[in-house]
Amino acid sequence: MVLVERYSSLGAVYSSLGAQVDVVEMLDEMMPGADKDLIKVWTELNKDRFNRLMTKTGVVEAEALTSVVLSLWTARCEPMLARFSR
Image 1 (spheres, rainbow, N blue to C red):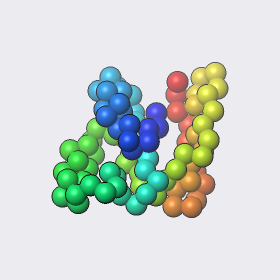
Image 2: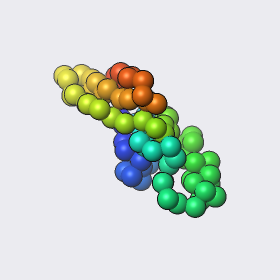
Image 3: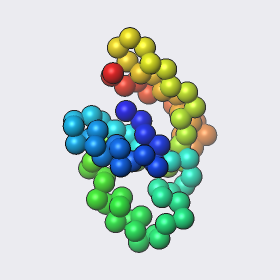
Image 4: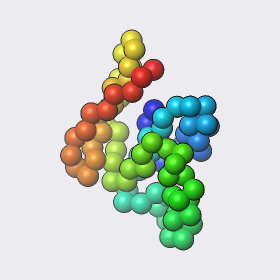
């Protein structure tokens, strides 16, 4: 499952239910505008909760197929295709 950073609290719920969750943020840090010390604490507390925490990454397209969800991302301007089970 891919979640935009602003929905990471919902990702925590899915993660606690056993889903592997990737969190993406288009800007170069999680929680832009927040205190740097707070961001470090949040990242440290959540590094094991989520599969990946990715910055400078955007979801371009996502398509739900019968058994998988395909997601096209741009990670630091490089296209990336990810496959997730439904």
